[in-house]
Figure 1 (cartoon, helix red, strand yellow):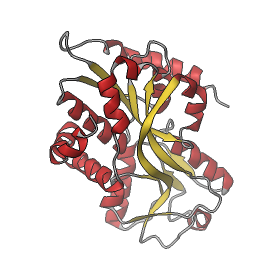
Figure 2 (figure 1 turned 180 degrees about the horizontal axis):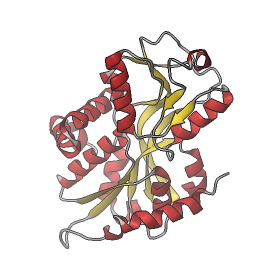
Figure 3 (figure 1 turned 180 degrees about the vertical axis):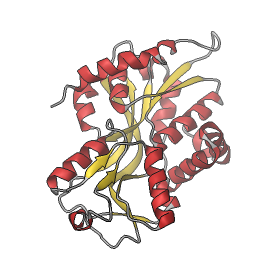
Figure 4 (figure 1 turned 60 degrees about the vertical axis):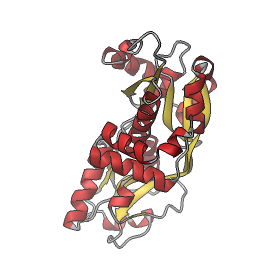
Length: 284
């Protein structure tokens, strides 16, 4: 198995130059600071910004730091971690390698969302229904599966799918927003595209898509969990209570992601918070 601790340590040293080194600054002596680490995934961006808006409404100081998932797990596992919490852990399957390496030094605070799924996605007008049919239509797909970052669990699962199904395809590494842009262009042109996909994600509300059937069971079903460093609940009990109660339905999460997508990260999260204040404040 890849030594994720060693890799994450090397990458984290570079990341700290650009942000983590300044995590201890505070707005005032009385401010309780919470540092949320998050990946560049739509649901993680939306949920993290919602937490920021809600906690700041109660006079917390909140810092958001964007990192790759391996760095997040690695940083939170440290005894003197500069982060506090991560709201987008896909377990028990997708992030299993990270949990295997770091889980003994982390705390699972709760589950935001049950039934997180991953897989290969095509527009509904594409007339195939199974991963097993991809090779027969390689030319229509240009032999490419549009993926996201290599640190994501779905990237590793797709490499496994290529092997298990003996696909004559290459996974193209990009980002969540770039993947969505590729789907948007293909749908506009009514062309064929296959991409890595997951639920919850706002693309399901914006486009008519379908998962390709996965008879070999490569892509699992997960829950989205909130993970913290050890000692977070003892240090900041009011903030910890908020995160332990943080839960969203599929419809609520789609609405939040849609607001963030259309209005920007903080403005969208603030608008959704104001419209659902009773729900969110009930977590405090």
